[in-house]
Amino acid sequence: MGDLKLDITMSLDGFVAGPNQTLEEPLGAGGARLHEWVYGLATWREHHGKAGGETNVDDEVLQEQLAGSGAVLMGRRMFSGGSGPWAEDPNAGGWWGDESPFNVPVFVLTHHPREQLELKGGTFTFVADSLEAALEQAHAAAGDRAVMIAGGADVAQQCLRAGRVDEVQVHIAPLFLGGGVRLFDNLGGEPPSLEVTRVVESPRVTHVKYRVGR
Amino acid sequence: MGDLKLDITMSLDGFVAGPNQTLEEPLGAGGARLHEWVYGLATWREHHGKAGGETNVDDEVLQEQLAGSGAVLMGRRMFSGGSGPWAEDPNAGGWWGDESPFNVPVFVLTHHPREQLELKGGTFTFVADSLEAALEQAHAAAGDRAVMIAGGADVAQQCLRAGRVDEVQVHIAPLFLGGGVRLFDNLGGEPPSLEVTRVVESPRVTHVKYRVGR
Picture 1 (cartoon, rainbow over the protein chains, first blue to last red):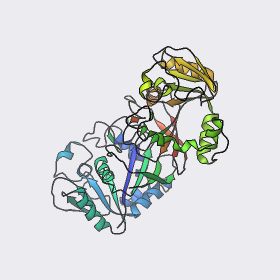
Picture 2: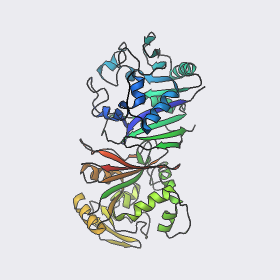
Picture 3: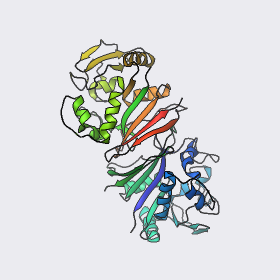
Picture 4: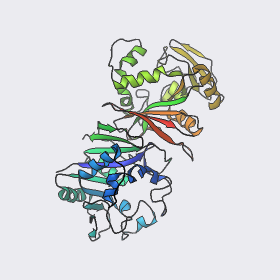
């Protein structure tokens, strides 16, 4: 079985989305700035069917992450659009439209049973049973490759509390959001231990990888 | 005038002290682990009159910080011991005893006027007027060298909100505290911008330095 990995961009003040999430700003005020480091990268563009783009250390980090990933786990609010208003609609589509940007099977943890969704770029399976059931299905789909927790913070926290995460890679964006959704919150009484395994420096974002203890 | 620098160790979940601060654990549950990276270093030991110790990248970072610092600014609760019970006593001594570990003049921001304290290793001046007054005195003492904000979080936040901080160096410790005193909180409606200027990788702690915009 592959590892369960959390790979996520966080502001220096610990947020994965800014305050006041709306339809126009599903990542909250200023939250879109978190991901600016990624859009110009060659690997990101290739993943979205576009040519060109930058090849730098950030690109290498992204490439490694995508190449190692065999399935994605996410929460329903991430699937249906941050915590925007339509996140409350259990039948809403994915906010990226008809084409999945993930290129691997995606498992959405939700309380609302729903039929599998076939998108160009990958199948979305909705798992309403439990985190354990979602993880089991995701690992089965991923085989020896990793299951990547795409977010949101709530799913990441559930996995950390359950002691199921093997690796955390945090891309620390050089900005303060000043409020919003905290990534490392509600970790339970005895959070797991961490060991730094790699740091990649870049002007845009600091990539720090940790092995997670039990 | 020298720069105003914040140089502080933070857990990956953003805390500079753990939960439930007590006399026995002034840094809260698990909080002392934040600073484990520093105690074995040659520069730290030399600073405390001891020989030996490790010389590694962490030591270089510490050495650079101390060499560049001409004065220290701190809050009263840090002076009198984290947020432990005796932090409420405006006449309490510094919790490190009769010898200052700073070796430069220290300015303590407090609401309680108090006479200057001469310790081996440096003078402590208590400034009850305002943050601006404390900064003015600290910069005058530091000359061309930097004024280092030693903490706690509250003083750091006051300086950030006032737009006075020039540089932030965060030593990100590979651990979760799960609660306690958050460093980057209450930053006000428009937090300053950040630019990554240097990252130093080490197995013990990740040193990330930022230039702070206005």
